[in-house]
Structures are given as structure tokens and as C-alpha cells.
Amino acid sequence: MLIADWITLSPEVARSLLVTSLLIEAFWPLSIVAAIAGFVWWRNRQAVAARVVALLAVVLWLPSAATYFYYVGGNVANGAQLRMRQETLQKTTSIAGIELPAGTLVTHPSAGSRDQIESLDLNGVAAVHGIPLIGHVNFQNGQPDGFVTLAQDAAIDHVPCSASADVQLREGALDTCTLSRPARIRGIPCRGEFSPDPKDVNCELASDYRAFGVTWRAGTRASIGANSGAFAIADRAPNLYFLGSPLPRDADVEFDDGRVSQVNLTTDGGWHFRGCLIEFIMVRNDTASFPRAIGCNLPLDRDGHIAVAPTAFTVR
Image 1 (cartoon, rainbow, N blue to C red):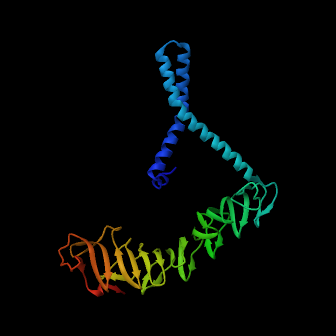
Image 2: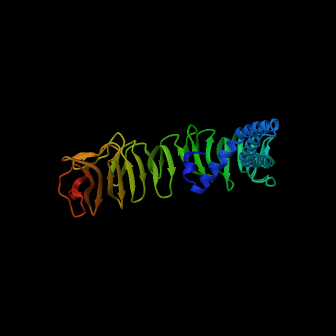
Image 3: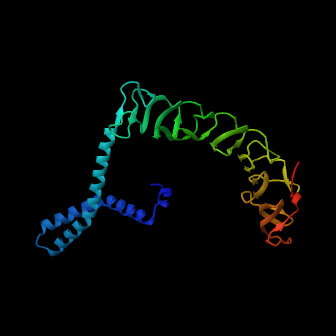
């Protein structure tokens, strides 16, 4: 298991899994110890010490043996059940409306549901519900699900996806892919990795794009909705200025109700203004303030922030 998987477990489950794993790993070493102790006892059956050591070795071995054989037996049973649900196609066959090439390993949900698919190990290219796929494909509710491998660049949900990068589906719908070419998604020029969202468009801008009255440059990572958005500035700054200066690289700008709501400057190490190191700019009621400023002697407002004029943000 990965560390991330362990973190999600409850303490009781994690302890149980750890003990089980240790017992399984200890089976063969304890078996050797028990065998040696048994041999010594057999050679010295009258010796009390040999008897005690042999008994102790067996007591330690039994929990490990029970866990090990339960684990091995379970694996054997699971393997047998899996083989009953699998078939390797001897010829091109259509299952669940999918034309599958010969040599494909098909895993069904149960031994009796040969018209349904749990997973595929494709022996060639197959159009799975219109998507050209190769390799391993998992299914959920009859649709390809999870990470898949495209056989070639293909449009998924009208989005041009690249076969050279990971593609993730969610019950047949696109979840994440890397665009095979720059494309306009709901009118927004996108490139690179793309994740569809019913409300927002999340992508890297392929060309300059005007949103919320600001021209954002190509390369900016953007999440754009109807009245809200977030922009991570890349090499080229937008034409949005704060106190007469362009925003630095890696600044994160957020909009709410069509207006700037906050700017995070911590990624770039902060921004200097009149001896202050500004890490965060917050905008409330059209007034910008610095709730996080270091080494600053400017006067504070009633909230303990350093306020600046409403015209601090300008577009040129």
C-alpha cells in the first residue's frame, strides 16, 4: 500500500493490517525456528529446556501459520474465482456493443454475466464507445472508467485529447486529458492539461484572452467561470497593475462577482511596497488591504490591515 492509502485508514484498521502483514512475513522465519526447535527436542526428549523451547517456538509459530495459510488460501480461492470470470477471445467478438479483437482478455463481473464487462486487456485497438483504446481498461456501470491509454489522438466529449499523455475517464465522460492541439473550450483558448467542469473552464491559456476587463497572457493557468475566476500568472504579466506596478510571476489572482477579490503573492516570496513585504492582498467593498505584511510601519485600519486607495488596481 502507498503512504497516502495508509493515511486514509482508521487507526484500528491500520494496526490490524500491520499486524497481519508482520505475521505473514514472519511465517517462514518462525517455521525454520520451530523446525529447529522440534528437531532439538526430538534429539533430546528428556531435556526440559528443549521441551520448553520447542513449545515456545510452536506457540509463536501457530498465529503466523494460521494467518499465512488463511492468506494463501484466500488468494488461491480468489484466483480461481477470477479465472472463472475471465475469457481470452479466440476471434473478433462483440460484447456489450464493443467490437473486441482476438486475443483480448475479458473479465466479467461474474461467471454468468458474459454479456457484461468489468475490465479489458486489449490485444489491439478497440473503439470503446467511440474512443480508440489499447491496453487495460476498467469499467464502471458499463462505461470505461479511470486511466486509459488512447491508441491515437482522439476527441472525447468534443475535446481533442493527446495519446502521448494520461487520459482519465469517469464512467465514459472525460475527466482529465492533455490537449493534442490548442483548442477553444467554451470560447476560451486552451492548451496543455485540461479538466472539464460544468461551471468553469480550467486550462492553460493558449493565447492572450480578455476576461473581467483584463488581458491575460498566453501561458497563464486559468479557471474561468461566469462571474468568478482564478489566474496563476506565468512569464508574462497581464495588463492589471497594482499601485502602478505589474503583478509578479506566480501571483494568484482571484475574481468574485466580476471583481478582484484577492491576490496571493507567497509563491514568489512576496511583493515589496514602502518597506513592507506584502504576501496577500484582499479586496473588500472595492478597498484593497494587506492582511499579511511583514516589516511594515504603515497605519492600520480597524481590522488591523493596511488599507490602500480603491484605485490601487488599474488596467492599462
